[in-house]
Length: 553
Image (cartoon, rainbow, N blue to C red):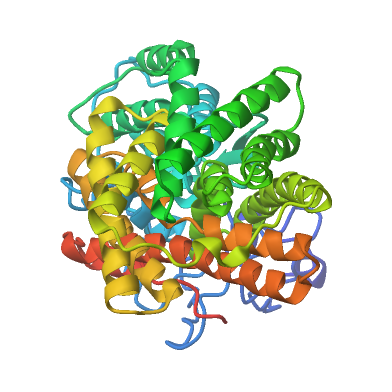
């Protein structure tokens, strides 16, 4: 063979023996050895590994690196759940008789690649619903839950349950105080679909909240096959339904709540009636402000004025009653216990942005209450009213009357929260148990009020969570109203009164005590809810691993 023939480019077959990526314009002379690169820059969409390429496995203590690097324990023949074998992901079933909240919360805490695949089941639609419609339904359900006061973790669990019920398992919900978003990625090579919704209006209606929980429960039930149209129809019915209690019942409940609270701090029949009238008048003024479109801050400010005005009027009239008990009773109907518990719960479960926003809302409501009461107290001081902070400190030990008053307070609180009639009896009994525990520890055992409040709130959270799991419902209707007797109404009033009388140091001490009591209530309720899970079956190994939280690093 001549030297010119040796310089001719090799044929396509000869070139392919060296590298399939070399084009016809770049011929390789014969006898030139070309080293293969360590890894290919053009990996196919199937993530195929070329034959003969040895992939370096990471050390056991090191991270996995990129998302496409298999771990050291990966085997092509025995692929774990985190990697999709050729035949699909095997179904890993958690305990099915657990409430959907526990099952969905467990999978939300797992990485996406480790979540068990949804069970294959026939859908009402022939080819399944469109992804945007499923995401829209998910956001609408999450909006009702978040606007109703549900915790951010349970809202995320509900959104994940809805998506998973329609086969969208690779989804990530995200909940903040005013914004809901969800993203679904069909596969690693397809574009994700993202949708969001803003929560602009909030309202307290636990009847609607319970209906949403039932809808999510039906959607997450493997034996129930709800079509997307049926889910939309039920959701529209929830929005159209009127509140279970008319306005006059709510106003009467507000008055009875204030009267019952005044009895808890030592009031008699006259104090009961005075506190009831002040709270009812304040409730009507708040409704008037709401109808005019004023923000909630001004509604709380206006609602706090009538009870304080009636207490000052009784003092100026030299009526032998505890005016401080009248004002304290009126404050009980305004303290935002629901938002406080939800805010602390979000903080304890890791939703710090939502928790900060909720607690900021509580602070604004509290400032509105403080401003309304302080205005009337300053007016009373200028008119010569002698309000004695020690007048209500010597609470008479009347256990039967106080237990009855605490149960009445919980009952009326449940009505104000628009709860279902079937839950009113349970929460009323739970409120009586809470005050019994508090009274036994505070008055009989002479334990500090903060510790007594925390233990009583823990009992409320424990019983409320067990009742909710028994009925597969939300725990809010069973806990929020039951903490009503524990709210720091008297400590708040005494702090405001001391500030109005230029005793700022004593006032700040009392306000700090009120804040400590409020935090004790919120933490106790959340702790009781966590303890209740110790009495439930916790499921498989995946559940225990997924329950681990951040350790601060």
